[in-house]
Image 1 (cartoon, one colour):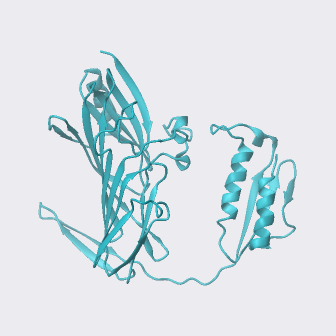
Image 2 (cartoon, rainbow, N blue to C red; image 1 turned 45 degrees about the vertical axis):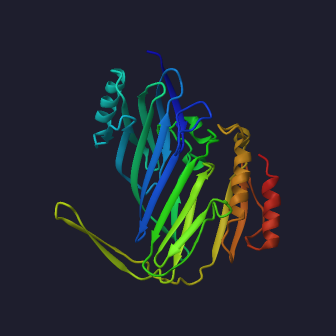
Length: 347
C-alpha cells in the first residue's frame, strides 16, 4: 500500500492537492450566552489522490477555550465519538491503528492555543467529516462582548523551542476559502448593534436580529485572518444567573456580571528599548533581518499608544541613544518624529 503524509496549517476544509473542494468545506456554528460561547466546527475532507493519505494539521483555538467533543463521520454513516485518554496512551493507540491500516483520528493539545489533528489512512476517493466542539469565554471590548474565531496559524503562534510546532507553521500561507459561519448572540437586554473590525467590509456579512437574539453570518469566508465580532446591548451591566439541569438529575449554575467601573486618569510613560547591536543584521525564519522585524513591530506599537501618555525610544548596542532628551507627550508631531526615526533605524 502506497501512503503519503500531508501537513497542513489552519482551519482547512479539505485534504487535497487539487482545487476541488467538497460541498460545505468548513462550517462554524456558534451560540453565545452570558459571555460564554459554544462553537461547533464541522470540516469535510476528501482524498482526491490515488494513494492512501495520512494527514496532520495544526488547528488554532482561543487559548481560553476547552474542547468538549470530537467526532468523525464516514461516508457509510459510521460515527466515531472521541474519548479522553492520557496523551501518551492516546498517541500509541492511534499509531497502532494506523500501522494496522485502520482509519483513525487523534486530537491533541500542543499548546493552549494550538491543537494538532491527525487523520490516518484516508483511502483514495474517500471522504470524512470531522466535528469539533469547544467552549470559550468572551472578553469585553469597551461596552461590547468580543467574539473571536481563530482561523489560521499566524505569526502570534510562532514556534518556540519545545513547542512541538514546525518552523513553517508560522509562515505557511493559506490560499483557501470556503468557511461558512453562523454566530448567534442571546443578550440579556435589547440588542443594539453588532460590528466586525476584521470583516466589516465583507459583502457576505449578514446581520439579523429580533428582540434579544442576533445572528451574524458569513459565506465562503477567506481564511486570511481571524474573525472578530463585537456585540452590544442596551444594558450590558445587568447581572444574570443561569441554572442547567443535566439528564442525570444534577445541576450546574453560573452567574455573569460586568460591573461598570470608572478609573481615574493615570499618567503613563512608555519607553521602547530597541536592540541595535550587530546581531540585529541576522536573518530570521521569516526571511527578514531581526532589525526589519523590530522596525515593523515598533511602528505598530507607536501607532497604538494610548492618548495622554508620554513616550521615548532608546536604542542600545555598545552604547545607548534616546530619541528625545526627555520623554515627549504623544501627539501628531512627536509621533511623526518617532515614525521617521523608527523607519530609518539600523544596527
